[in-house]
Image (cartoon, rainbow, N blue to C red):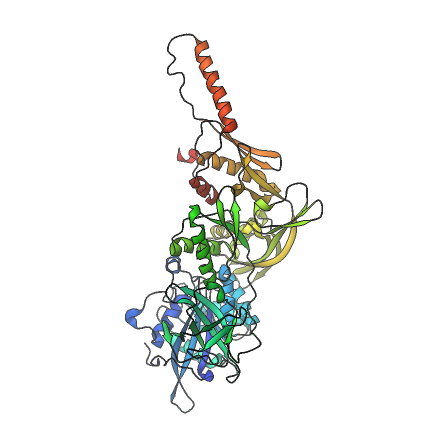
Length: 622
């Protein structure tokens, strides 16, 4: 704890001129959470004995993966000498934000609650594509940017080189770029001083009817919905009746306070403050992120401009393995939606998998994190179908169908198919340009530009079909560049493409869970791969089962699961060959009859393994 740290502020409304609201923008693994930990220690809001690494990352999954998924707000006191030489204590409201492109929506909400941002860059790696994207977001919101190089204690650090790169990007002098180490604490006190000096105080009308913007909310099983707000105008006090302006729901404030970093009740929140409200409401739909909170009587009439709803980029079906868990899955998604406003879902049914939900995600990591949270936090056994994107299909009669699931793909003649495309930006060392271009071309990418950011770093801009990057594009990019490349993408409209729907048939019956919409050139490869995979996974039946991949009525691949044979000749001792042949013919007739009435039962494990690609071929095992 620094001698400059002040005893934590009494949680009461503070003079707006002594408040600074800021967030930290950084790429994954650039030391954002470590710097936040160091700030908590230096300002004294967390005692040394209570300190732990990644203090603000509350979820186990965040700690295990070393990434931030949820934004966290925390209030810290910091004393700075005033004009008369006496220390003035400022309230610093810091919002720790995620770094991955899939959680940009969390970042955009945090930026709307701040006046400034710390742009944190690893002094050994330089700026990454996703940090660039978040920087542009901050600049669009007119935030004051403080450039900072972290990890200057690393042997591989080159602060001078990356300071020049940063200064070139945002304009300014390389000497203005602060050099800190979140690990050792070097330069962190200067950074806090710079925050007080450069970031403007929040502006609002203290005498106007109260208006507070909801920028986050979480569900607590004991206390109900906890709503995080940024006060813009007026003041809110405990026991006051409030109204949510979009839903018109009214509640009484049971508790109001600030996170410092644990929830600390206060006597109210005034202009510019960031805090939380607890109303005891259990219905998670009544606290919408982006909504405006005001008082029930004499409240504001004009809501604050909210956030634009995020557009899902990837769709996947989520089904409970046990059908009786369906209501639990619905409740779990309701509660997750509260803390993750980017999650979208609607009910759907599948012949193979039963009742479930069609969920929209911002990307593959988002999908992975949500399914992992459903398993851990709600103890659900679930299966997810292969991710897909939205296609607009025009049929011969000129009607257009929006397809989020291969089962919705229209039958009959197709006039054209429109697929979503994205504008992708890839940052990498210049040595890997060839392999990146090769990868993008195999994924039907079109190059737009190539710019050198420094003497050895290149930014490549491509237009790529979204369907080509939602599977394993990022993994392939990392492996081809030894982990050095970073990717950011944003929607860029639609383009016409030569796409077909590949169906998988088991004994002539279509299994909807295995259908996929793929490019015509890759249809054969997908069909043969799925047919071989299912042959390994589906147990042998009493009769022969053909597995076929088809485009419309045309079969493009086939595998057979051989029938189990009973040794009917075991009882046939002696006699000539005709007796044996008669028994075999009788068995053959029985198999034929069984094939006509028998149904192929696909075990749940086979679905899970086939959809996740988690299968070894028998050849590999040998």
